[in-house]
Length: 179
Image 1 (cartoon, rainbow, N blue to C red):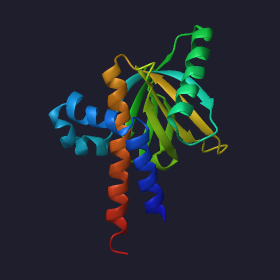
Image 2: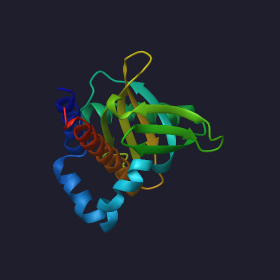
Image 3: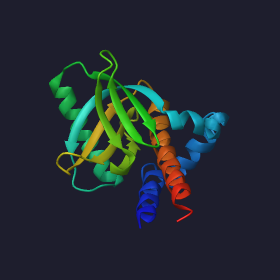
């Protein structure tokens, strides 16, 4: 049952976050040929330097339109605030996503891969990467958005999270194969 849930969530990340055509385009057209060989670095964690835009609560764990609306709310709120965005190091691994303040090196948050239900690169704000996760404290669904320096970096973060999800599933299945 846990494997089925993990597989469904992984397929949601792989298929719904970007759509099958966009994912195929990313896999075959924009990423370096060595992308498939990046499993070992992914086990250790792939790091991306991004700017944290903010968070908003959402009603559903996944959905392109819902995520786009949440991202619009976050971006609008961020623009009104006119503050300097927190620069973070977002590390993706099969364990999940960790956020570290880029300046102070202080750990901001550590999100288990099992709490993440969706990730996307926004179609209109194509430098924005976002994920939806269940809050460990309240259980509420939260959409967190980040600004990347380039569109390709936002896409790479999204694909890396999807790859981490698949790797987590593979590791889980391997650990439970003998049972």
